[in-house]
Amino acid sequence: MKCAVFPGSFDPVTLGHLDLIERASKMFDKLIIGVLVNSDKKPLIPMDDRVELLRELTTSLKNVEVVSFEGLLADFVRETGAVAVVRGLRNTIDFEYEEPLAHANRLLNENADTVFLMTAPEYSFVSSSAVKELIRYKADISPYVPQMVINYIEGRN
Ligand code: PNS
Image (spheres, protein in one colour):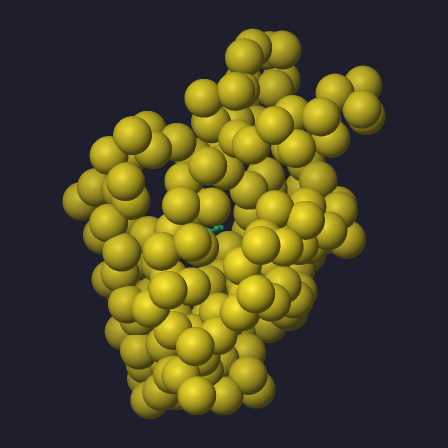
């Protein structure tokens, strides 16, 4: 069984992430969404809620599992027995960020090969950091995130 890991902060999960998850879930027998516990950053959305939102948003994808992880991605890949890491690329800036990470992960774990998927053009401007900025100014985030995330954010205010 070929399993892949789709790692990220998902703070919050965007429409771009969901498109990549759906596409990657068709390429592997199992896709594990790894939500990074990043103790350096104060997240917009607490870890448990990020995991819960992702679980609810992917209930129809039966081969997708959502778990949190702490530490190195290469170790998480080893623990899960995955054969690949899936990352999305919107542009060359993403590629420049991702390239050294992909090499580092492979040096740490030879099975942590990264598979890059091009982000769908309609989501090429979407990022979690843009969403956070828009939320701060109470601007419309509907082109960026699923309705469930909007409801979650509105429910907190
Ligand atoms: O959604 P993000 O924030 O772009 O995801 C970044 C992520 C989680 C893929 C990256 O920060 C990561 O893998 N962090 C875990 C620590 C690690 O393994 N770092 C690379 C060592 S050089």
